[in-house]
Length: 245
Image (cartoon, rainbow, N blue to C red; front, side, top):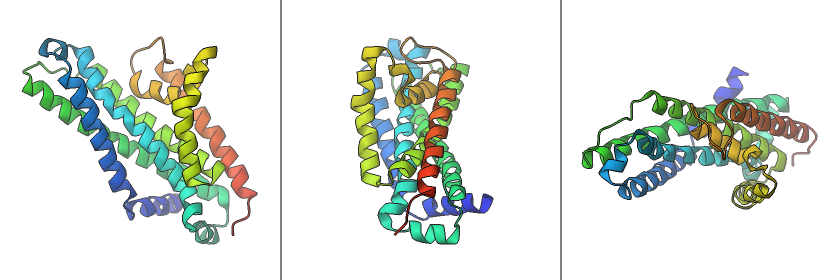
């Protein structure tokens, strides 16, 4: 199993997808942090809560990690490399399992890149506005831990979704439509906090605190893992029974 995980990591490391996704994350983090900091006065930025808000920009990495997870599985079908993969490793559930682990590790790495970028930009803005820094507080460290976990879980969910649908573009579009349209509709029945997107958001930003609109951290982690497990098992079941041409 370790060799399969290494093989999946090698596939990701030898393509440009990680470079482009990393640049996308840094671009989005730069935009969010700059807009947020630029619209706050020095007195506002001096508040620990405001500085924590700046760092929550790194939570965007969870969405990018979700897309990465989809590409890890559905991308093999899109590019026709799934045949060679299953010829080398005929036991398909081991392949999907390795993809889940590899994607989770890379998702965690993408979240780390986002966090470093958000921290550096926030520090620059605080220094530029002569505001005292609270970026090394315990609350901030908890936020960082939550973002890392959210990136890993989101990537695993993406792998499961990609294995279920096996259509890269369709899976990405469906995921975005669900996040932008489907989950807001769940607010009608007060079920929105239990949706996968909101569960991941709660993991990313609710570490060490609670929110009336999101689940608390640990329930959100368990729910996110449940989504990843169910989609992963369903994906394995479907891939095991599918024909590869």
